[in-house]
Image (cartoon, rainbow, N blue to C red; front, side):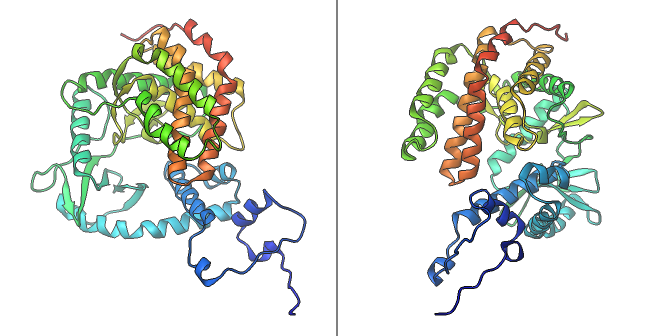
Length: 400
């Protein structure tokens, strides 16, 4: 028998692989069996999970995170972050070539092209070109942008092609060019002043959205019906492996008791720092209305606040820090537009339902790590439930 050879894992494994293995086993010998040819051809769950993680790292990089911040968030060295970003840039390189072929349709040719989002590119720091696969979604977004501009809301104005069309078609894809908004994405998620400004920004957008509903038709969605439908079906199919069925039932019953009393209107549906631009601490623009729909309006507030928890890892929020952030966001919102007492009482319930929604979604795409993260956020919110009644006491002077 050929004697078994031992190798130091630091010498043969990428740092991110070694870091993940060390979560489960350290300081001893670990036998790794050979793969058969059939198994070697198959993509493992871990490889798939790494790909999804790398795409998320690239998105956070485009939103303005530094390599150091990404390393702390993902528990990787800056060298590993650089390798991941380089690999992701290569995968998106082909789309840049297509963008170069599309630009002449607007009479633009030479210039600097930078990717600012997985589906969006910047030309000469003046315009944004976004790629769509769905024409109906594109046309709806153009209508939203024009309606918001009429309301004085800062969004990127669509730019017509040389032939006067609202968008261009090339190789079965649709391309929209808009003027670039000034400002950048923020990442200091614990700054209470910024939290206040985010609350105000959401409220201004909601006020304008009410006017937009008179001009543009939108599809109605119901968080409650989602909880009763595909979310429940997904959790049942998964066998309630992570979330207890009684926790799901409690959240749905709480939502049922108040749902008919919660105000419904057009909402953004994807509120996070990447979609709100700031300049010198003040809001300078809104982007990305791909998911906009009619739903309960506090969904946007709750989605933003739970998203802050989802992004934090190493420098995670304490309960006190997060509750201060929640108060600041809601206070900022109410300085523009009031919330009903029922809406404020429903905040923790809606937050828990949003995290259950994310659990079901990540289960459906076989992303175990993100499912676990959503569950941990759910548990964190549960632990904070006793702090939420104070929202009913929040009153703020409002802007005219």
